[in-house]
Length: 360
Image 1 (tube, rainbow, N blue to C red):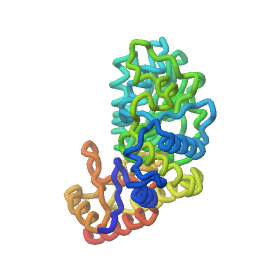
Image 2: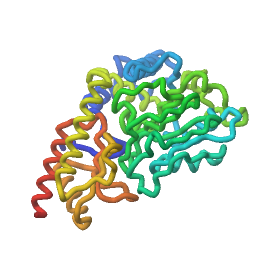
Image 3: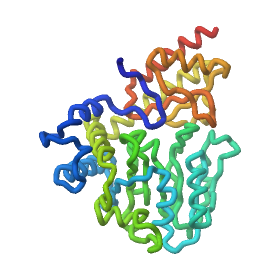
Image 4: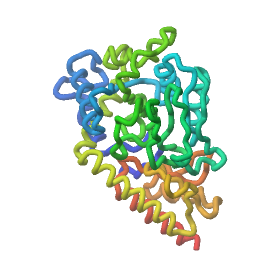
């Protein structure tokens, strides 16, 4: 069976070239006679894999030297707790922007640790917009400011980076990391689950500024302290070794594509053509304000919801899969992460136009 164009929001499509390399190395990595999955994480072979992965990520994102890169288990959701545990440092409150389901979950979790000041809440818009930058009033005494630059479910994305002054900015970049170039120095902490633009599920990347490390309460679990991961090179216990290895392959693939500037240009082009196809049609619509539409997650609604099932089934027959929208939103959602080739987006647009014609 030939591979389909997989528009899943996560676990998401992975680069075919990377999958092929992992397949070739599955039984015997670099003439060692063992699979990466069988290696000791403390052996020199695996240590070289881990070091190369971090080096490639640092090069891709141009991560400054005063930031540590951690390879963590527990998914991005574990960071909803690890962030306050590590960053409160005696302070009693943190500022949060609530712009979708994932930031809503982050707000719910942080209430276990401190007072949360919800600086902006777009619930009333059904999360179809982001607050204007000028409307944000942060507390200068807050421990940090947390936001989710891209909300996977509703497809809304900040078109700016909030200015927080001396207060550290924390970003859940799970569904937008590596989609474009960013200035890492604007953030105190960046975290992201792997299963969208990085690799298989089971790994979380945390990029944290050095001055924010070492402040966790001594009563907190050792595995929730960023310093543990720094002190032990993310190997206090056995890390998700295969996901880490696979992430390294994806980072190397990204460099081969020309780095973040080239990836950004491709992603911008993919998103623009898909949104144009939606906007040019009276049959499809997108509910998100134009200025804050996601590049990675594109929801769209059919004029007649009774046709949703037929659309999904016929698309799948054409090799276009995982287009059903999230159950809380309905409609369709096309996630077009880095691994989705432009021809896949072209194929989706062509199908959308053909499907619309059959309903005329």
